[in-house]
Image (cartoon, rainbow, N blue to C red):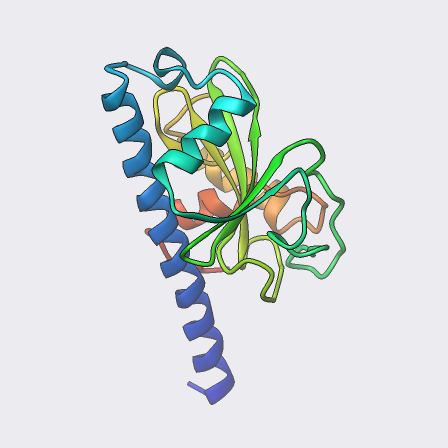
Length: 192
């Protein structure tokens, strides 16, 4: 193995480790939220608006910077796909926050029957490489409290995650999803 490939493998594992940490923190917070509200799912617990979503994060996380509806300085001003294509800005009208861990996100309440909210989660804030699937991921939170990739219901089947990965994450398009599901499928390893 060459030194550049060792460095690349280390960087990928570092990204996944931070992603897994935030995933675990979010998963535990969702369980605590439902338990505190004595509810069976997130909507029953009261997660029914963007305002309640913002309150959830401020209550259950150590938010060190609430950027409101302004993308920077919580997130970078632009992002790219794995293939190097500049991505559009899908963040309009959401809330931006930075956690004490250094992770930042755009949180968007969707209000669906299955997906309650989703995050554009940048595991290292404004620091590079600012590439979807490397340090920023689209993460979807379902009414049952599960965290997965974009789909109809969670947990997604591994085939659904692979399809999303192939058609979105590595397809060179300007979509934000599919990469997180691939990492879930590959047992918390970045194999792409």
